[in-house]
Image (spheres, one colour):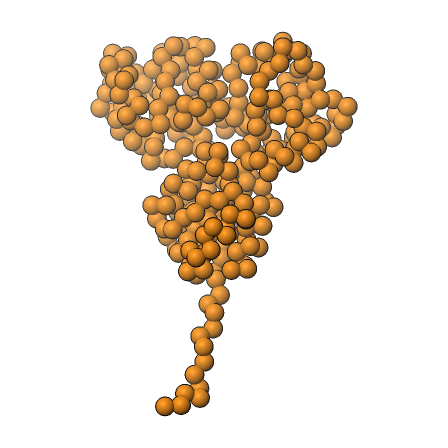
Length: 299
């Protein structure tokens, strides 16, 4: 039979949504803008940052081009400005910066400062302090160092299993204070609190997950429920970005990329997906997010 009216189906246009809470949070935006301003106002001074200002290679290279250098350790002698990044540092490290001859500029995120202060408060009040987070993360290292100035009963745990070696000490102490790395998952906090409930007599919980992280995760979960695919943009070294990807993988197809070029690795999955949502970590600059969106439109 002749089918004169037969037409090939039109290509379905992709529905691509960008999350409202994607990209720089307040603390990161403040740190990046302030460091650039410091260099602009002090063109003849050395401007250093102790450790990577934020976990994003693109931004670090941009700062290097402006003459803002990253220090991996504090030299015996230095000159100029040394910036304390948004993750914070211990009082001991800040003192070393001064002794080396640098002028310290503290750009610790205000939310991170609150966690440090709460941990100090709990340590001073005689609680056995549990910091929920990753032991090797710079934010957690600084929180622990500040609390340990007041008590030796301070530990870090990323899951209940890591608390098990301290079970008898916690039982004997009875009073436990809990603070949380600002970028942690609420499910991680809940699992640790559940464990501590069976061990401690008294628990003081300070949910110090920052509002920006909480809103970013809540919105991304909602978008994931409506999407065939979620693309999380940001550094693999960024705690908040990796946590975001982990949460969304339980809901729908999720890929974690650092830049638009990496989309080519997922060409088949992208072409099969009609509803795509894009979100990004707190240390992901706007131009990288826009490059990802532009690249997606080509599929």
